Length: 377
Ligand SMILES: *Cc1c(COP(=O)(O)O)cnc(C)c1O
Image 1: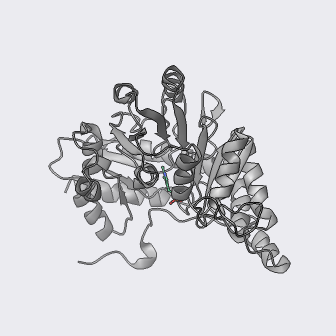
Image 2: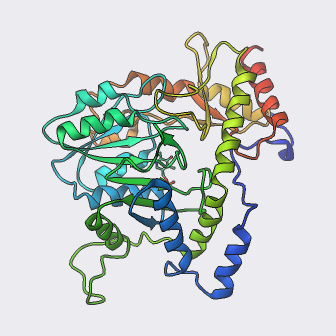
Image 3: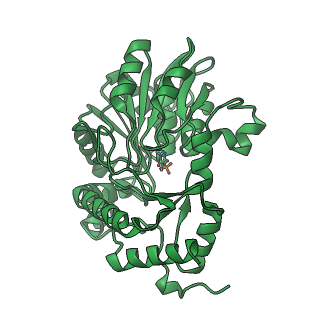
């Protein structure tokens, strides 16, 4: 099997770090502030809080840690149910399970790929305590509907906006909707710190719990602890990257939208490829990644297409694999009887194609030509 020359390979995503990143990193080194005590950490917290109209930002070591911190800070545990999307990253389920609460998975909406509101409503029981709403691939959850359900049933909202930095829903920022809202700063996200995450809240007590959990649950009397904590701190070096990245967020969003529009046009003649919704009722697609779904007419699945594209020098990633079909959760007896056919189909027939903000129109053309050759040999 011969692949394209390595230099010709179009990766699925590469971070762009050509703003003030180097300058701020040099500041960390020159000042000696490399731990979590440095000034960039509180600056990134304040700037993210401002972006989302929240009172508190708490920087954490990853988006996964931020999700678990959110569930813990809301004091959810044994006997509590948290509704999560079936079609998401495992971090969402892990956060709930690690706190001893029970994740209840609901199916994806076939158009927005985000959690389906009718399914959320149907999953609410007297034990339900929270809804974890996750924006997927640049499309957004119907938050007005989630808010209504949460208010009606007295539920917390945990908003996972790891794929939605700078996005808005009816003009309100993603990250503004949760009792706790969560971001990731992994390198494929719209703002990266290398590794890192953030939890945002308006509630002083929740913010204090988030800060305590992050830092080993230290108390007034240093080295005396009343609770089990974690080391979920973010370093000043990581935060320095994030502050520089945040300065360029609007450029990154514009580049993603241009990339999405261009793929839309190039893919229009390929009738067996479903392209993403351009907008939901409440927001524009920001194309965090450009996902495609193979139509049922095609006798091949995403795995086949990804392997052929790889041979042609095109990087891809599969869509999420449904939570209710995860071997680890099946062994644990979780999600038994979950009815999530859309999520199952997306997991098998969905993939995303190169979506970095540095991608050129020529590279996009190469991606689509390669896809055409795979689908119409
Ligand atoms: C990336 C991501 C996470 C996890 O973030 P990490 O920083 O990689 O731990 C959580 N939720 C969603 C929706 C994500 O896309």
